[in-house]
Amino acid sequence: MKLCIALDLETKEQNLALLETLKNFDDIWIKVGFRSYIRDGKEFLEQIKAINPKFNIFLDLKLYDIPNTMADAAEEIANLGVQMFNVHASAGKIAMQTVMQRLEKFPNRPLVLAVTALTSFDEENFAEIYNADIKTKAAQFAKNSFEAGLDGVVCSTFESKLIKNATNPNFLTLCPGIRPFGEDSNDQQRVADIKTAKEEAVDFAVVGRPIYKASNPNEIVAKILETL
Image (tube, rainbow, N blue to C red; front, side, top):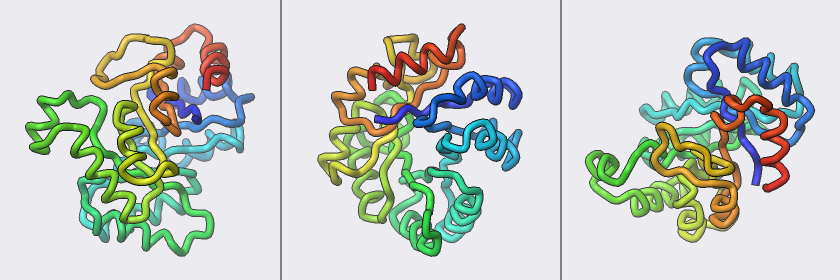
């Protein structure tokens, strides 16, 4: 399992200062989401790499549009040199296939994951939109993503093993909302600790607040890595 740190602080300077304290950790992933990328752009990605070229960047923009528009965006993301990005599985299999076909020309293309069910959903709110329970729909979205040639999915810890059973053991699962040692769940509904993530065969554990709100983020990251 790999640790993926969510950069969700209020300013670029705060995010970069956090990474400066963590620059000696080579084997971690850095998640750059909507707020950071919209505010700070391509330059921010370059600044992350300047702190430690071994940092892997996950650009979390959740592409969702018509197939060709998604493929155009995917090509531009690949040109940024990030190591992973994501799309919404609910955009459909054709859209995901179009994205993967467009990326064929890149010899070292980024990993592409599909979002199944956002971890902020509970069963009631999810069913209101998708007319199905979370596990059933997540497995269906994952199968569509697998058949479209993607590398994995974004899901909650509690769907990880189910998805691997429905697709392939090597099909990647990236799970947000990880609270390593049982911290508060905040706005996430389906959260888990590291022990549960390991039991559920999670490949990427996304941790945000428990790291960046800690008085000593370096210490927390070291402790998390020890448990992975």
